[in-house]
Length: 278
Image: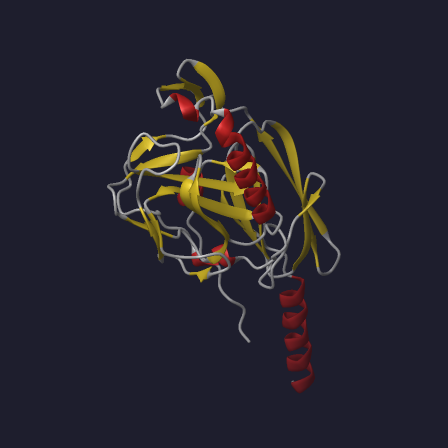
């Protein structure tokens, strides 16, 4: 009887170790991310890109604004077994958005070019730190960055500024009054807290781990600083209309590495991932 019990316990342990269930949160579509979680995941790739796996077997991947066609996710488990998932994306359609701005924000005067180039280099330097931290700080889940959930301008529209075609709107503009609290949508580390940038105004970029970042633009005041570790819901600044803005609001942007993500897709993801028992 004892031998049978030992065999049964060993069998349970083997089954537990080899379990290869993966849960996915989010939808595979243009401008969206997907979070994967599997206890025995060791490696994963989206197409040819190697993904980062944290200690809980959690990983994230995403698709750009313009993504379309077939993409493949390959996941390898600790027992070397490999599972492949296929995603067939249909191109997303976007609208055109016509905006009238102060002409200096459409065609910056020559005297501002050195400033803009300097600020671009500072942003690029901050982004070199992104993707080097395998910790999935976003396990705290996502919340809205402002108390108001009223959207003033949606993500992805092709902007026409003062009649001139420009880049897409790579974020969501939330309605906010001057001085409203701006909060972090998830745990993370501030990679740059910029003061009075030409386009961004006062802004903050947060690294949530594994290449996932969020930005908060046009604030009237910054309350947090470079390198600070922040928690979901923490106030990092106050809403305003600094930089290239037509009035007080929050421009909230999301990227997974260089992939432009619709913030509303991110905020719609609901998930529960249990920490492993020690």
